[in-house]
Amino acid sequence: MLGLTFRETLDGSWHRLSEPGNELRCVVDVTVVIPSVTELLGNTVAEISGRVTLEGLATDRAFAGTLGIGSALREKRVPYAFALIGDDGRSYRFDGAKEINVLSIPRSITTLGAYVFDSEGVEVGRVILRADLRDEVMQFLTTFRPTRTKK
Image 1: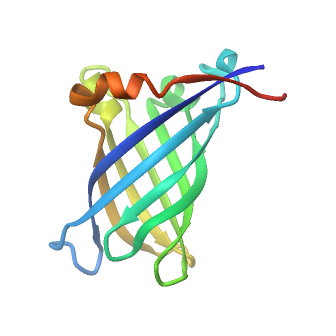
Image 2 (image 1 turned 180 degrees about the vertical axis):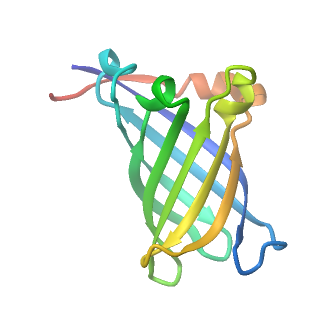
């Protein structure tokens, strides 16, 4: 089966709920693996992995999770979800989505709002990330690679 792989870098800020005025840096480097290009408009859930920095919580930490590509047309959103281990050794969950707005496609495909939860499911922070496709569109497009997957 023919799949697709690409990379994306999202950069922005986050804050702890306990310190809403203290914006901290957040960077997420994501590798996306789509299992089958024929399922892109169906219920495709891509696997994601990469590195994340949430300043003051997680420094260049590996993560793995999912990207809900199939919901882009159906729900007008692309959810990102992944687990990570913080610098304190505790587990955290990152849940966010790109909200698709047909009146503002460039902004909606480059902006990701997210929440950070601790291992108990308690929200600890909020995130806003952006991909700068205008300046890096060629670099982004060069990351697309066909892949062979078993299915």
